[in-house]
Image (tube, rainbow, N blue to C red; front, top):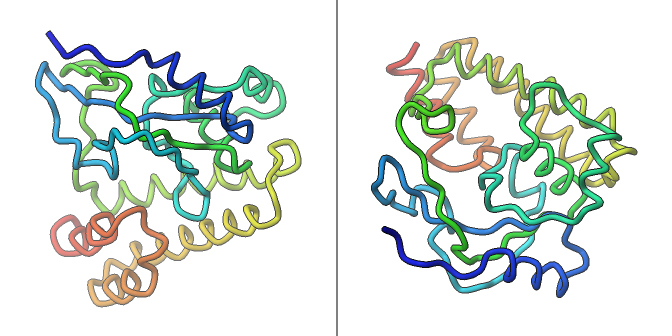
Length: 218
C-alpha cells in the first residue's frame, strides 16, 4: 500500500557508528492517520530527507519528545538509565528522550525512515485539543513543573551539565511565570508576556495560542 522505505536499522546503526557522541538517534517519519498521509509541514523539518545529522540541544527544545518511539535508535547503555532514575507514569520513549537531551547526546538524522500509522480510536491516535482551555494549560504546566524539579534533583545521575541545569531552571521560571499570567485571565497582560517571552515557547503558533485562549477559551 505504501512506498518501500530504506532499511531503518541499517541506516541508524551506521550513523551511531559514525558519531560516538550520540546516545539516542531519532529520525523523521511519514505520518499516516486513518489511512491518509498527513501534511509533514505540521512538525518542523519532518519532511526533510537529505540525511543531515543535527544535534537537539536543550536550549532549543523542551523535554516533550517531538518524534515517536518508533523512530528511535539508541545505545544499549541507555537501558541502564532506568535503574538510575525513572518517573512513574512517563512513557519509556519519553524517558529515553529526557536522558539524552539533558546530557547533550540527542541527535536527529533527517531521513524519513519509517511510517507512523495511527487510527481513530487508538490511544495514540486520539487527537488532543488544538486549543486547550486556560485551565487545561495550567494543569499541564503544573505537571511539567513537577517533572522538571525531579530531573533537576537527579542532575548527577543524569549527567546534566551546569549549563543545562541553568537552562532547566530558566524553563521552570518561565513555566511558573506563564501559569501566573494565565491565572490572571487578562488579555493585555497575556500579550505583553508573550512578546517578552517568545524565545521560551516551542513555536510562534504555541505562543499565539495563549493569546487566543485569553479571547475565546477563558
